[in-house]
Length: 226
Image (cartoon, rainbow, N blue to C red; front, top):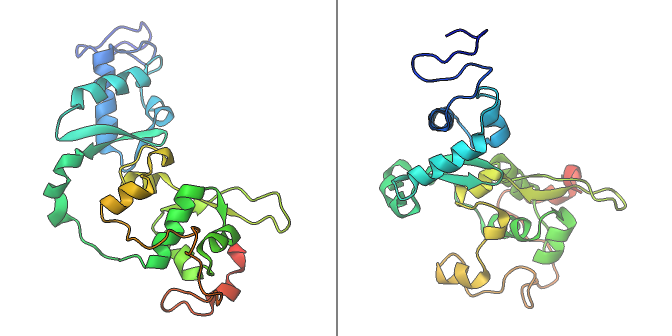
């Protein structure tokens, strides 16, 4: 390959000064995504490809090629990645082990953040009607399902929380707009018939002292999230 003249190699791949054919770009994108440990944005893909390439077109062509197959190219936030087709997820059940079961408090906190983001800790507590333990927040941060957002321009400048691309990826969502409604959650058996946090009748009895097991007393110590 002669980089100075911009000639093509025998395999049909262009030089750094000439974009290869779209079919070859598609192969490059496929290789990048296959080897990537996390979803890749178009900017990240473009940084690895020859100058002048069109990663957006290559990704779209690759997506169509994998449509209907056992592995699909899916959008996760502003990134893309290969994932098992939803209807074949049961085949992977033996490889998935449930290592940690979220408490009801953690599930409610995660749901509030997902549906109301960006939201502060005080707002989460207002919606739930009870205090949020430090352990609950720490667990969700450790799972990389939530992250710190921008501080509110209000007294004390409290931090906000939002869900992460890892959360969207885990639950097979392209964006938070794809979150299911209350009716869908109940029909899927993922939500019981008790009122959702923040709805009429969902408040506690006024004691406001609900915590996760093993986290008693953490509320007063958690200055980071006040």
